[in-house]
Image (cartoon, rainbow, N blue to C red; front, top):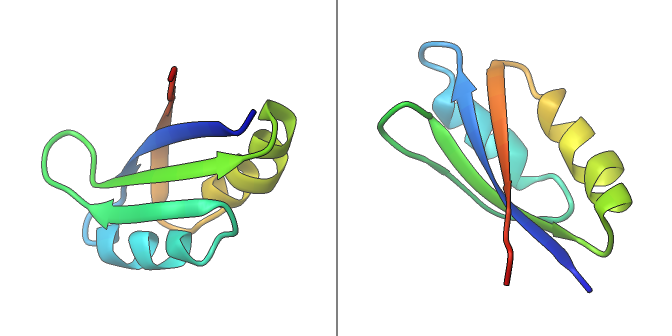
Length: 77
């Protein structure tokens, strides 16, 4: 079963565009867009397992410069 999740991202002021661009290049990321509101970027990603999701996707996302906070919301379908 494929694990899918939305990740809501807060960035440093003025960094939303560069963060979204950097995130798009991470394998497993299917969507990364700038948004308005309490979060600056929303992304969707998938991986074959939760372990793979954590190692292959989340650790790379959290290493992107300009990110100050993330909230991961797994898809339940």
